[in-house]
Length: 598
Image (cartoon, rainbow, N blue to C red; front, side, top):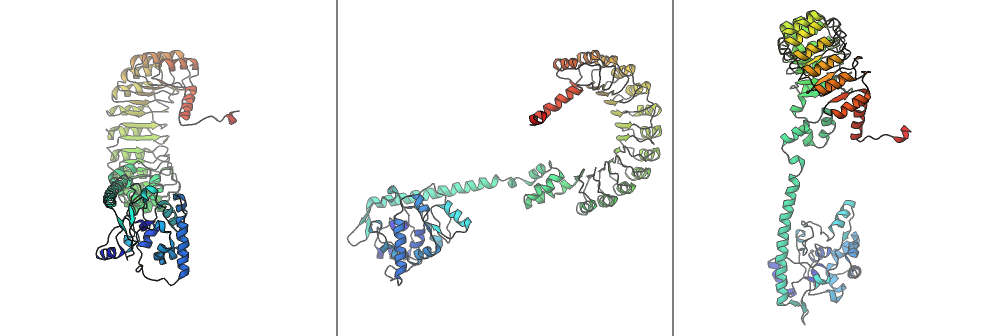
């Protein structure tokens, strides 16, 4: 009932004079601001004013009777006022005193003009959420009020009736009708008001702390350097189509220049020349670009990017068969700091582009021209003479590349560490020149038709830093060559002998003489039996992988026994690979479909 149950029971006249001099705060027995507070503090006149509209008084009396009949908070929560009824309460607020039963009216209520900012009662319950002053009164049931605001409902909820404990106040009525408080009531009033102030201060401090903790716990409160580090683990697609759409702050972070230094567009078929032109016009600090398998990118886009990005260091364009010599020529002319060029499987690439690379890109260290069938010794020799800092060179199925190119690289590029001439027209006379390379660590000589055992053994003896040797598909490699490799290869860790002419003796020699070899692949060697597989697993202390794919003379039972006996070694056969694949599938949550299997 709001301020009808106010504790301050002084006479009307005396209290009116005091309130004119100084505004006083009132304590409400109800649990929070209510509709009646709006009525009591409304801009109404004095008590003695007459109301000309009797119908409005009758309507207000009916509403008051309805309000008195409420018995529980649930019923109060359902007591809603329409806009018309709300106007009656506001306009006829003073006449409610005569409409309410006498038992509910304590001392005469005072009516004074107060700003709407003061229309909030003091709360007696510390559990309620603190509400800030508004121009419209807030109800005790804040949840219902907020729901009403979201629905656009203009009706207001009235608070529940005070409980017996909260409404029990030592009120006395004297003969003149003006109620006065006893001494005990005054003490209760002062203690309750001080308690209320303490609760309000505690709640305000807790609320401020909770607000601070909420703000600081937001991810955007992290330093931008940390967010940039997190975003750096995302791909270009994830940043552009995911993170940048969260908010403007994240969009700006995703546009940071460091993310556009290395651009990986590989496999994106929607990438066209216009995208590369936009990247080149806005981001001139691009250092790496990967457009592998982008079939819709033409020479125009690559040329625009290269001409606007002179700091380009790495250029990768695998299987872009639509690109011609023009793109690589433009990259070579405008990007003198280029260090890596991987353009495998480009049919239109010619020696002219390689000559320009040798002239302008002196810092070049890593080149890959596999399956570029138009490249010949002329372009590779010019490249070797101009780029003396080369460390990696890989050729694959380049039939126009001969021993002349191998000799040029061996003489002009002493820092070479990785050399590969798979399937090229190279012979032992060219391979023997590789013995000059003291830093050679990986050598790929797969499918060299005229490669003899003596050349291989000499390369292993001279190149003491050799760690990986690939001799697959060379039918001339025999057990004697493998034995010398095991004895002389002091740093060798990987040896690939797929489809070579070897027997169990080669595997036994590796286990007996080598203490460094960890990987041996002897797949498709038809003469390997259970004895060779068992002996190398038993004698080798460094072996970690043994490939026996399609070694038909090795029984699967023997392999199963070796797997249990030597768990630190991975044995590769058809059955073992299938089992590992199924295990990985089960770990990822895959389960066999019984209906399909049946």
